[in-house]
Figure 1 (cartoon, one colour):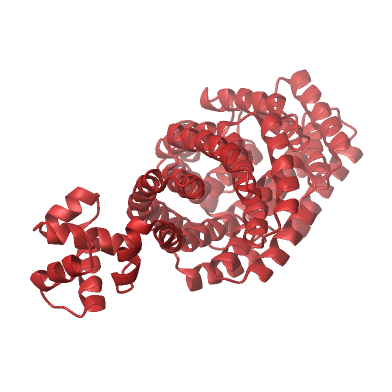
Figure 2 (cartoon, rainbow, N blue to C red; figure 1 turned 180 degrees about the horizontal axis):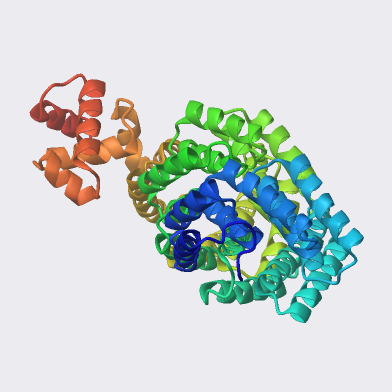
Length: 560
């Protein structure tokens, strides 16, 4: 593409060529600096203004990018090039919409359409304008209209051999089919698009949009394997372009989601906090804040979770199911029910329902409404069969087991819960595995198998403690106390434990064996600081100040 416009002197042409070369190498900062210097001295032609606008966008200079797209649009109009003018108006409109400025973005889309209509040209830009129209249909649950729009855009892309438009159209079709419940077909389309992106057949702005959209869709359908795979690919793509700004924040959110599922909560928290810093002022901030709230909730930092959920709402994100589960953690079952029922009522498509039904089952069981919980668990099972992802199958199996347990069909419940437990272990999801172990322990308690229940609780306790899942540890302690009360051999533990938690009793027993805090930490796979805290707490509760006195107490009350 040759530049057109006033910048035609020998020195300017040399500078422009250096800027174009930096653009081709994806050295976005160099491209911006070089082309902007030329433009300041002597205005660039329309095509080089487009390059400068892209470089500005990819280096996070959104205001500059908007201005440059508008200038390029006007320059194309001066040259009686309606397709070029429409192209610039489209990318300007898309950038505004992605930043949440829907009215301004829609205005530029409208201008692009009018320019093409008045110009009367058959061009690829008409296909680009079908994409936002089809997306509007998709988000409005007009899936038939969405599919028709994306199909039309894809046909235009094929006719003009435009790979960017082809990728955006296939992305939209894949998202729509997933929302329709045609998950296998939708995911196949998303994989196809990602292959084109990885092969660098798609230019940077649509490539970044596609990466983030596909990963978000994978998380929405609980496809943990794909989410991990494409998040790693996005990280590599961002790293290959050090100057790239717009997609780094969302990349960090996706990394945090993967780290959280893998049990690496401190790292996940660090990543999502960095994401919040990068995404300030962008619509994706709501997604980052929701993820931050989830991590706070799991770590029993309830006030911080409440604040983050509320802030996420201000950025347009739904606070559920997380906020409903927060109400449950706060002990307000009635508020939790009201919140999750509202979320379930609003969830119209299969993806949305799959995201809220697991929490619905958990909260209903906490409210002793096993009948409604059974219906929700059955629907979740149907959805899991359609989505066919290991994570959602494990979620549905565990929900079914929990309902059976509440209904008193303990042996059937244990079979389902054991199946879920195996799935979580294979998926490498330690938090979910620990929660399944607690339910398995309850089933064994109800079958009179206190020894097996104790083993499951010990493993779950270790896993939850390693994660820092304080709220779940407190629930586990209640389960352990119920089991101890039901076991006559554990009566001395309950009567003489002085309010010690199960973990503190475990530490006390190791103290009585003569182990140091460091040795206890190694035995229990805990940090030294955590063991120090447990020892300090149990000394306070027992009213002793030495390990010898603690040992004497343990023997006097049959704790060893």
